[in-house]
Image (cartoon, rainbow, N blue to C red; front, top):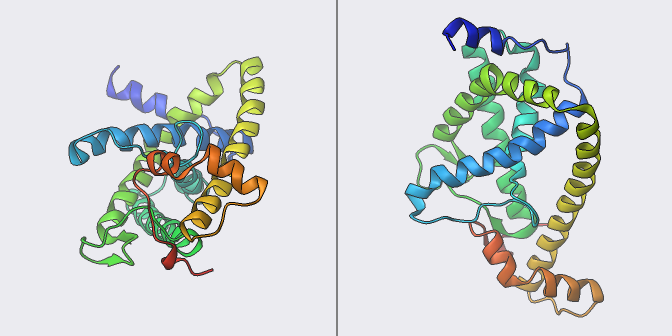
Length: 229
């Protein structure tokens, strides 16, 4: 495939504004692809396969899916504009989003999901100028390369399959996110010394025990004292 063919392929006919159907599948697909990419790219640094899932069920990291949706919505009308403009907006939005997620997890649950405290010009340890540059690059590549390819892939799914898969994943992802938030709350309560007494507490202690949560969310450290609700 020559350069001209690649350019023509990436010139996907897209609507004036993305619809909920495509945005949902962008969230699901990039939650999966982002997790796989992070796991593989982090292997040389970690030295072993580290669990990096963001939900209690399935191979998904919703921070990537949410980031892709956010970039799509904010940069959609700029996707054919100046690369520098796209890069700058993506860098600011990505860094702000990363800081918001990290600081929110700390305030709500005392979780430290990642830390850039050793990087120069970091902000509260949850983002930095270096990460902003990475987000800017990711946003530019997503709008120019990733989004057209993913859009074509979504459109290529046969309608009967698409309808069934969409209904299934809407239900599954909704339950997955809800169960994850409740499992985080139960994990936080146990770490804070709250007795396991109610049937709900017992359910989460049995099915989403401290051992399960520590293994599933291997990159997250929990310090209940950091929570400020």
